[in-house]
Structures are given as C-alpha cells and as structure tokens.
Image (cartoon, rainbow over all chains, first blue to last red; front, side):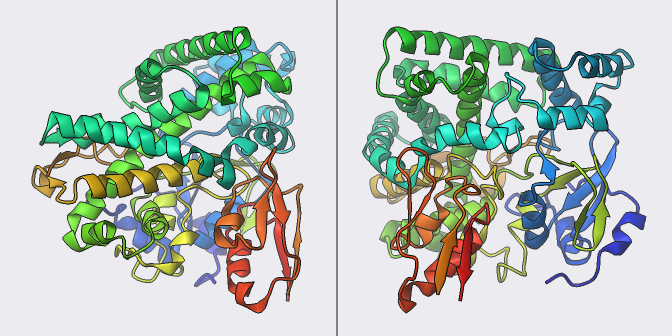
Amino acid sequence: MTTRPLSYARQSEPIQPPTERQCPFDPPSEFHELRDNRPLSKFRFPDGHVGWMVTSNELARAVLGNPRFSVNPSGSPDLHPDRQAAVLFDAIKHDTDFPGAIRALVERYDREGRLADAFRDPEVVRTLHESSLHKLSFVNTDPPVHTRLRRILTGHFTVRRVGELRPRIEQIVTDRLDVMEKLGPPVDLVETFTQKLPSLLTCALFGVPEDEAGTFERLSEVRFNSDATVDDVLEANEEFRAFARELFERKRAQPTDDLLSELGRTGEMSEEQMVSTAVVLVRAAHATTALSLAFGVVTLLQDRERWDTLRNESVPIGQIVEELLRYTSIVQTAGIRTALEDVEIGGTVIKAFEQVAVYVSAVNRDPLVFAEPDRVDLTRQSATKHLAFGYGVHQCLGQQLARAELQIALTGLARRFPTLDLAVPMDELTWHRSDRPFYGPERVPVTW
Amino acid sequence: MRIEVDEDKCVGGGQCVMAAPEVFDQREEDGVVVLLDKEPHAELHNATREAAILCPAAAIRIIE
C-alpha cells in the first residue's frame, strides 16, 4: 500500500545516509520524510558508490524476501566496504576451488586500489553467488548452498530446543544477578550483566568452560569496533578461527553433547566451513543480545510505568520483549543485498549488480504497520511484525534463543531488583556512534 | 480454511509455532515446519493468518 509510484526514484539525486540521532531513542528524524515519500531512495554508500536505500516495512519485505537479491558480498552499510572487501578477498585467496581467472580479476582491482569495486563486478558477483567458498558460512551464501548449510544448524535453535535450554539460561541469569547483588549498587549493567549473558550462554552451547567467555567477548568486539583498522579485523579473524579450530580439536578428542561436537559429527561441512560457522554463531549472538538487553532496560527505565508493567507481570513477557525489539531495533541495517539481475521493486527497476541497504530501524517505525510508531506500547499487538531479526531466508537463526534470553533476563532483573533505576540522569548516558553496525547504550549505571 | 506448507522454502525460524502452536510444529532434526492441522477450527484462523504473514520464507499458503 505505497502512497505513490516510485518510478521517479531513478531520476533523483543520491542521498547520504542519515546518521545523526536527534534523540537517542529514535532513529534520525530524516527517515520519517524518506519513508513517507521515497521509501526506495537512491543512496550513496560510505565509499562513494551509488545504490539504493529502503525504509518502509513493505519494501523491506519485498527486497529481503526476493531470491534475486544475493547476500554475497554482504556486510553492514555502516561499515566501510573496504573492510568487508578485505575479508572476502582473504577468503578467496585461501580457497583452492575458486576459479583462477576470477581470482586474478579481483587481484587486479586490488592492485589498482579499488578492491571494494571488485565485489560489484558482475563476473565476480556471479562467481561468488555460484561458489560454495569453503571458508564462507551460511551468512554469506545464497540458496541452494545456504539452504543446506543453514539446515545443519536449525535443529539446534527450534522453539522446543530453546525451551529445553531455559533452565540453563535461568541459571546463568541467577548467577549474574548474584554477582550484581554482591557488588552492591551502583553497578554498570552492561559490564556485569548484559555483556556477560551471551558469552556465558555460548560457553554452555559450545560445551566449553565458562572461563573462555572472555575470549568470545574480546574477539567479537573487534569486528564491530569502527576504530579498528582492516589489519586489526583480519588479525582478529585469524585468531578467532584458530581458537575455533582448537575447540573442534578438543571436541574430536573428547566429544560431548554440544553444538560443536555435533557439527563435527555431521560430516556435512568442510573444516573451514565449520570454523566459519562457529565464528559467525559467536559474533552474531554476542553484541546483538547484549545491546538489545541493555537498550531494552534503559527503555523500560525511561518511564516508570513501563518498568512497573514489567514488574507487575501484567503483560506477558513475550509481548513486552517483541515491542522492545521493535522499538530499540539495535541492528540498524540489514546486510547489503546485491541484485543478481534487474528486479522491479515498487515500480522502480533496480539494475543487476546494484546494491540495496535496508534500514531496519526506520522500517520498525513504519506508521503504515505500527500506529504511533515512536511510542512504546508494551501491549502493542502489531509488534510481532517487526523486522528486528530481519526477513527472508537469512532471518536470524538464533531468534528464539535471543527471545528466551531477553525474556528470562528481564523477568529475573525485575524480580531481583524491583526498585532498579538508573544511577545517573538519562541525558548522561552515552550511546554508540552512528557508524557502528549496532546501536545502543555504551554503559548503563544502575542502582536499587 | 485449508493450509499448505512448502518444506523446501522453510528456514526453520519458528515464527509459525510462536503464532499458532496448535497448528504448526518444527521437525526435531532440522526445525522444518510440521503442519499439525491442515484445516484448523475457526478460532485458530486469526493465529494461522498471523503465522503466514510472519513466515520469513513465505512458506505458508492459506486457502480460504
């Protein structure tokens, strides 16, 4: 139900991404006008190349659900494409099956100092789409390779399987609440609670001792740190991969009942694919869940009525969490999509090999789907239609686990510390820079 | 109302189970959708429609 045809979109001037937030709780206000008038806009990526930006719920589903868009190469539009290109180039260099002629083509771009352009070259994109680059995981592949790789994992993340993990999650939450209580107020909720949960849970899932949690946290952070150089990222990648390889070695020697041991047993993935998968699983789980929880708590504490609603347990926690996921929308943009052929979206033709950035944070405030979208309504029935977990075949694999973590963590926090509040004025909170792929509060000092 | 599911399209997201657990389940080994009730009762129709809308892979087809 778009308000006007979008055929004019090709003729317009490319816009820069709106990045500055006027209010920390709301995406940049420029998105309102864009979404109302030009939900598909010509867009200038950080490295200067021109593509498209999508800001409405309807068009987001149209793009993310369309098999003619590839995630290869993917990456967040907030991160400079040079960095994503470097990682992809690294993968190609190590893949003995990658067609030599295309590798030579990428190398030529690199020599000319235009590596990022290589990954918009039709020949390279087509080759990537068809290859099952052994170093890549399901995140950077398209169907049918993606389908096969993802299916190896989905059984571990079903509603039922996650339900079986709930007691473990509850235990981890209780332990962290104990730590907070022992430290006494004030504490930084991020350092003592929100950042610890996902890495401790990963330890549980992977069957590794909890003292490895710090390694997972450290290696996950580098990838998303805008101050890190390309070399920092590649180095962290290598260290992470070496660590994952070592974990798989341990599991081969002494298999236990955990995700890594099972991955090793299936024999359906190459060694390098397993390593990539393990790294992706840790990275995807870490910063996202931690931030979602932190931003969720701050949102609830911003208005005492909201906190009381959580405390009273008068609204199902599942519903509260869906609205918080929609409102906080910590993943601001979905991974970049590259058109494999000319595709018509809402009356405009996106040409083959042009790239599209879907601004999820804007999409989750679409007034055509969410009445008064900038208002937090913990009883909102339409909240389930958010795209905080994305859409299409790449929709977050761990979404049920994420939901369980958020539900259990928030419930536990409210029960243990019913008088929880910020220990500093709201306007003293600091928030992530707009050029980071995930957005949320940096520290959350709390008291009770 | 009659329902059809496309197992090949399913990515195991579980949104259908969340929306209508009486109608949908997931396979143990790979999370692919299992249709529990091809022709659900009237009181389950809204939940079923919600499940179809939420499915990220558009794998649920409703024939009204």
